[in-house]
Amino acid sequence: SPIPEVLRITAKYVLEEELVAELGRASDSIGLPVRVFEVLEEARSLGLELDSTAARPIIKLMVGRGLDALAEQVKAERVAPLVTLVRGARQLSLGFGLWHAQNRVFALWRDHPEARDTLQPLVDALGLALAGQATP
Image 1 (cartoon, helix red, strand yellow):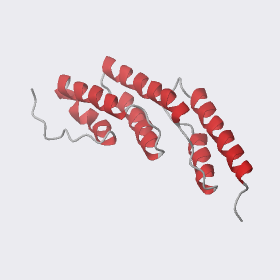
Image 2 (tube, one colour):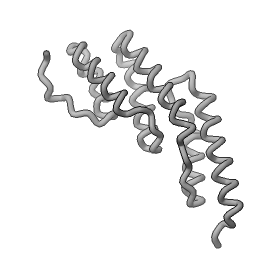
Image 3 (cartoon, one colour):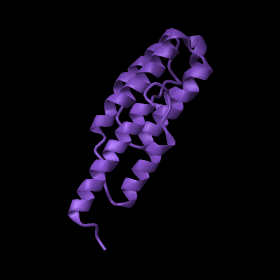
Image 4 (tube, helix red, strand yellow):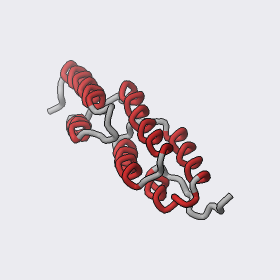
């Protein structure tokens, strides 16, 4: 039987708040907590579509910090968690400033041709097609 509207609204609000709280607790890291996936799955199972507007600045901050670290030194150890974060955010439809992230990664790609193999997983996760780009 369908969920009464008052319960739907309440559940939606509670789950949205929990999503933001979980992301807030993880904002100093570069990774999505498992609980974020669980909250979104719970919402889907209830037929709820959560508004992730409040979560966007947190995800954007997390991606930005990961890109800042990568800009300091392009290393596989810095790329891997960022790839996981980007894939998770995209899978969960959590906006994080895709265009801005793509531009930053393109700049790294352009400025560090020696690190392109290292950057390739992030390029793929962001949906960029740079493999055929010539070295400037």
